Image (cartoon, rainbow, N blue to C red; front, top):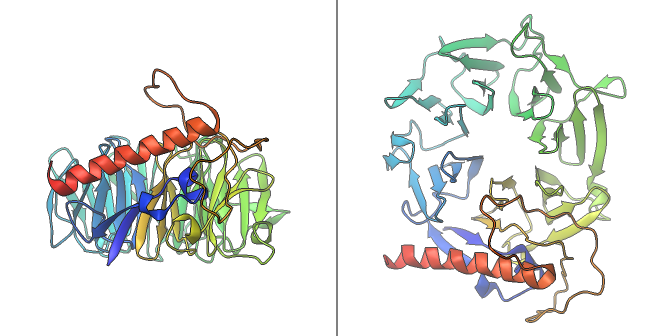
Length: 398
């Protein structure tokens, strides 16, 4: 039985009893996520977060409620009436108009002004198995099977063959990210290295990403960096790449622990911290070392963290076996005390390490904002209680 949880990073690190965590049993297509088998996540158009799972599409709304749809449970959504093509959803994205795009193992579905258009024709997609998608300006780029890349722009499809004249050189593209600073598309492949496309308006020419005069190999995953450039990573290494500046090492798994752990995913926060999902919990890297470490002892249920995603509110969503949850954004920059002894009323630490603030600027700032450790705890607790209230209302029907 899958469950969804929320746990405050601050409360968890102080080991407040786990009764503070909230659990929702699923699959429940009205009050919880459809499955913990999360394949992709994206920010929605309406302050929501959209999850592609192996049991359908689940949406966490701006007011803290859930709803889900799949082939067996079609329904009305904020993006129109939706009847998914397959119970397995492999990718989700929004285009420049805020329309929802959904990828499946057997085709593609995207929202139009009148409903949804379905693409299950190899005239448009040379392979119907959707690996990943990304919006780049007013275009949507789609990676399918071992068939390279497809571009959709203004109603037209263009196919870039793995061995075509544009020098893509990649059969199975598994990840893509757009560098916000240079407006370049960076592509990670299963076995064929990393490519970059720096100009989408002129002649399309993919170039290999190189490090120390050699193409980067053995790295398949690409993630955006809000400060410019992109992160490249595999199970042991994280690199940063910026067109013009090249590739620079960020960390090795042995920098996290004396006995190296496996890196499963990463997510960059707007506060400058790099979060790392591993087989030994979630690490926070502040540029020079480990600034925080959350494990199952801190309430995330399992040390094996499969996926991370930071949404527009600064919440860090995490996926562990059987559970999905999020860590609310911290509202201060204090040290996280991971002492296993429970502490009900923490003292203010004598020194405060330089840990970047993970919270983006709020859209509507509160009249007054508490400061220091006390403020951080009050903010986290208020966030938790607000979420508890919304869940309780949903469960009781109030």
